[in-house]
Length: 325
Image (cartoon, rainbow, N blue to C red):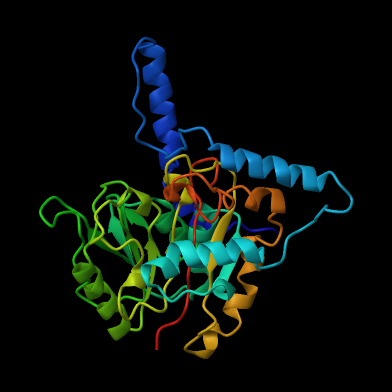
């Protein structure tokens, strides 16, 4: 007889954003003349730049001609896309990420959710509070937590982000194995300095932990002193880092996302992980027409040269993963 994954039953009765949508709908029905500023799910709000539209049209025309038609893309993504991501988003800021370490997937949300599947279920997970719900929910479904009591799950190390600590969580008091960080933070908007982030990198290396670093909102950083990527920090050579190009001005709502995975594994567990990563992530089927639009943005401000396109809910990402010694 088929059995359900009982860990799903630990989840809250309603998904956060669905509940927000219901409440907004009810309020709008009662107040039809009120304008609502939505601060729930991030969504793209600007029309695509002409360069992206032109690239989409060109790619569609290629698909309509037998001589230029393409089916599924390469399993790790098209080389032109991977090269642009490496040079524009990492190498330009001194991060040692090469094009052959990048793998193209189908969106940040699924990547952030799925990457935890690589790790064992008996590890200790540290998650900021508040933060994007997918970090917590996927670990609950994987069986890494106990029951939800008084709004928090047993077994999770919560990293409190409060006014008192300027919304920058303190280092855990005890050893943890998997750490989620999000800067600029969703939902607080807090950023982290290089010195503060270096403390986290040193803590993770000392404890042989993994940091999953979400930099989805890095485009909103205007101070060059603030790091846009964890790879700008010395010693950060082994952790996933997500990035949302659709959070940049006029980002595309097309669902494509790059994931760099380093060719420099530090222990045997990682030797095949990079090779099989595309299977649960389902990214091998990314069509060329989806990946072509962001690249030829000549004539557009550099902020509009993403190496990719985002999802309908405004999420598109880059994950880089090596394992630290």
